[in-house]
Picture 1: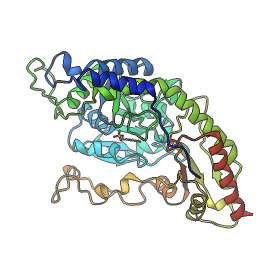
Picture 2 (picture 1 turned 120 degrees about the vertical axis):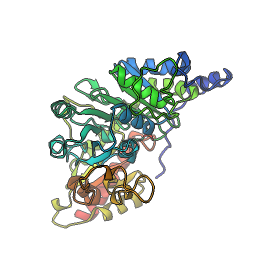
Picture 3 (picture 1 turned 135 degrees about the vertical axis):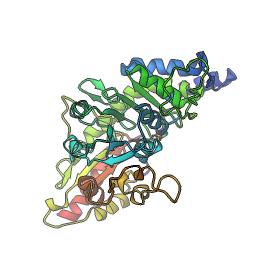
Picture 4 (picture 1 turned 90 degrees about the vertical axis):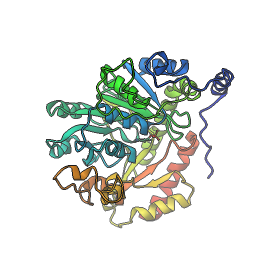
Length: 410
Ligand SMILES: *Cc1c(COP(=O)(O)O)cnc(C)c1O
């Protein structure tokens, strides 16, 4: 089965690109303090549109969400050796952004139902060194932000929301990304809306916004006119987004609602088509509290529900053979990556940042049992953002699942 490739672009992006190229300038940023520190007119317009849409005070465009995460962590006045709690199910950047500032990622297992950081596990991992929680709204669903925020408040921690996969998802009527201290989105080519590569930070805190802008734009903190600016973590980068990408993103944002509506229609069909297959659980969440943006459609397969035990691998291979190219098996556990296993990040001879503390940091298998079990045996993922799926395609997916289930479990 051949599925249609996704293409979000139409004449609107084309016209914008043409207009901006014809203007003769694809970026207006300068690092020096002054009007152009904030970039050109498309960047300004983009940030305004995002602030309005997401109902936040400050939006900061950056050239990727990885860059955004580095800005976010740096802006929290992190000291080398500080710890930040993060979950194993995310993209490596959520954890490596922490290492960038010589801070130490401490992994907290995922919630078995929503696959985001489990609030029940957070407090067990808090130490005197903990400064922040990095909550990742994985697959398009918000983490349990009320519980996370209340733990953060009690322990004087900051909260960063990685909403790369959950743009437009809501939690108690507020947008994912706007419930912690800093949130943000990715616009790489896999994501709901995109501009090649890009990211955007949102916050309601003026000082955090200023610091993130500094880190993203060279942080020449010796800037002649801003000598009073605090120097903490003012190691600057060039994380600036181009005018061309900003212009395209403005068009993309207009399409977000429609894209989310479609993902929800596809997911609803999948829910009703797959939920009765024995051993399968489809995404579960409280619809009174959350909405889902379905970057990914996660299915949990429990082989013990059948008298005949068939490993996931066998089923997935059959599903793929019958044409389901969007199927994935498990999800990478970031804590098991070599950088953590070998505790090697800066150079080959030292073990920074871990050696900054006396404590022994353990990243071995077993520290996040749920995420590990799901990765090894239980998660079957449908990449429903990978193609431009139609209802017919989804009906085909369901049909193939039923055939495979019938063949194996009849
Ligand atoms: C895509 C993604 C990122 C990284 O975003 P880039 O824009 O590609 O740098 C980070 N975290 C999560 C959860 C993501 O899905």
